[in-house]
Image (cartoon, rainbow, N blue to C red; front, top):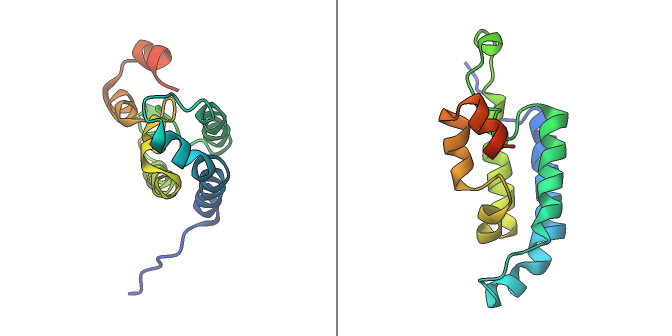
Length: 126
């Protein structure tokens, strides 16, 4: 039995969009913030808007995408994991430190998406 390792079109779009954002927004300013490492990269607010748009358009990104919901138990929802992996991969290509600094997408968001109550998710997650 053969294994198909090609990305579906939906995930290829996630990868292409994130790569383009990393190339146009992160790479050009990476050296600036390497030299001034304690400054907040305000340009990342634009990247957050890009991720938020992708999240609402594709319905498998953001803090609540990986949450276990009753209505989704019988469906295959591994696309959220793969989309998160591809976004991380491509954003890391842009600049790893900046990828971890993108608002609502950093290390803490994984914990929020896994165990937060609905109230905590509304307050802390996106």
